[in-house]
Length: 220
Image (tube, rainbow, N blue to C red; front, side):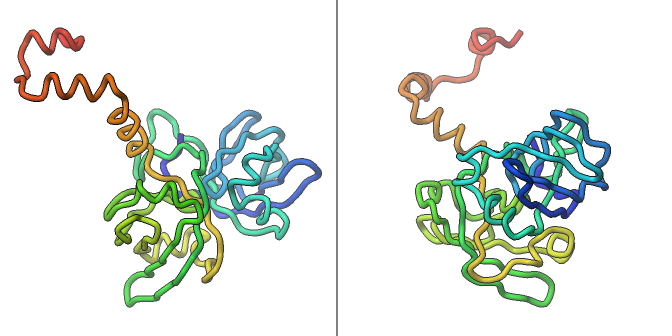
């Protein structure tokens, strides 16, 4: 698990059948088997090399994310090591499993921030977008500032610290980004669509929380 707070900007390139990522000095040392989010994609360290690591990347990951294209161009990527249980959760829970990609439609420089507008390429995930929702963009925990009614188009407001300390300042109109929606939204949808959960809610909709009810739920 990750939190969406970027700890380093590195670079990615092809290395035979693997990818090589460097730029891990700020959170070194890393070791074999560590999980590191690369532009929001959870990768496993298969070999440590100098200030970086090698990782295997599946066909699924290459087809669903931007990593293949970025590796071909030796592009900049955001890096974050996996959370420890004692770490502060400064952003939001991020799994490192990218849902889909989006396209940068516009970038507006304001006096104190930037407004970046994104359009989903995979529109089935747009239903998870609403104003003030959390969204992970290229591994960065961000907040939806405004969205269209169906969530296909949305904008994020980026403060100077985030802009300068992540790869966002390399963005341009037309660029493709990795997107992961809020895990909690997907879990909530799954529970509410579950027939047993709906029946339970309907059956207990008008009941008060009592000592007996709490004991039935495992509370003592």
